[in-house]
Structure formats: structure tokens, C-alpha cells
Length: 282
Image 1 (cartoon, rainbow, N blue to C red):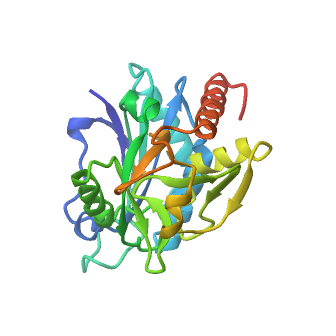
Image 2: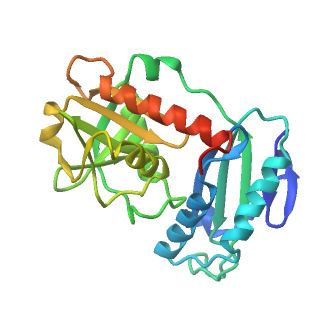
């Protein structure tokens, strides 16, 4: 049984408790972040906690822990789960209990949930996967909040179409991001990804760092109509890493197979994460 950190205590997952009056429960008001380990080393932990802080700032949620305190608690929670080969780590900061059920009081609690890392289907990476587009926008997209109504709804639509993910398209027909992923497209040797209006992905930032000397990078918005002209598409996320996309809605991307450039980036990322897990890179 996994051990979680809940409001100052390490508890077995079956004994983890959160008040029904917490406005994270009542209103979906809270923030979280998610990362995984490589060789039991949490990947870009400080950057993930910094993003948690930024998410809280964006929605007006006051945190009672410093960045270093949260990082230390995450490491301690990993140590409480020594049987995991690799771990998924979910950091949650709740909105706390509010007298009127809606106004934050600065009394939220910190939760760190460490669970075994689950492997995703091999065919996603070898054959490529399909996604669906949805006409929807996230509220305060720079914040990773616990309000995931849009994502749950969009994912249901994607699954009905045989997709593994849904990608948001805004009112101006701009392709933004997936429900839990960042979006990339290749046009020739130019790698295109949205510059703003999205959650700043940690995996996305690593990819941009790894490819800066190999490919031309264009930080710009893609119109929905441009997708048919892309040579390659892939998504990135902490738990998914890099997933080649071969179909969007009813449209097949290029040859319908993962592209050479995408495979190259997948290899670069794999080599980097292996080195990270061994402490050879920071």
C-alpha cells in the first residue's frame, strides 16, 4: 500500500482524508502539479513546484509552504515508498475550508501522493496515436488548477472518436494544447508550438532546450486549418513523455506513421532522461 503525505503526516493511502467542506471538493478550487521519477530521481522537481506556486498565484490561492519545504516533503514521500521501481508524483494544494463555501481563507492543505508509475501502451510510441480537437478553452490556462471539468468532458469526446487525447481549439480557431499535454507540429524542418495561452509544460521546456541547435523553432499559434499541411505532430507531457500523433479527427497526418524528426526527438529525450536519472545532467 502506498504512503501519502497529508497535511503534516505520512499516512497509508486508505487512511488519506480530506474534509468534505474543503473548497477543492465543493468548488474545484485548488492547484496541483504532476511529475515522475527517473531512477527514483524526481524529474525537474523545483521547476514543477515553481509552476505550482505560479498556478496558486494566478488563481489567488495562498500557500503556507515554501518551495524548499514542498521539495523536501516530496523527496521524503518518495522515500516512504521504497518498493516503487519508478513513481508518479501528484502534488496538491487545496483551497481549504471556507465559512461561506466559496471564499479562500489561506488555510489550504498540502498533499503529496506517490504511486507506482504505470507504463502506457507501446503502440502509442511505435505506431503513433490519434487525437481529437474540441472547441473549448481552459479558464486561466497558465494555472494547473483542480477544476478539470473541461478536460473530463473533452476526453470523453475524444474517446468516442478513438482518440487518446483531446486538443483545445479556441474561439479564434487557434490550436492550443491538449487536456494534459502540449502540442507540437513540424512543417519541414520548423518545429511549431504555441507561445502563450497554454500551461507552460515542463517536458515542453526540456524539448525546446534539446532541439534548439537541431531544428528551427517557431513559437506561434497554429490555425486549425493549418493542421492538414503539417508533416509531423506530437504531444508532450510528464507521464506520456513524447507521443507521435498520426491522426487528428478524420485527418491523417502525412503518411500516417510517426515521422523521422519526431523519432529523433524521442531518442534525444530518452537519452536525456536516462542521464538525468543517473545524475549526469541537471
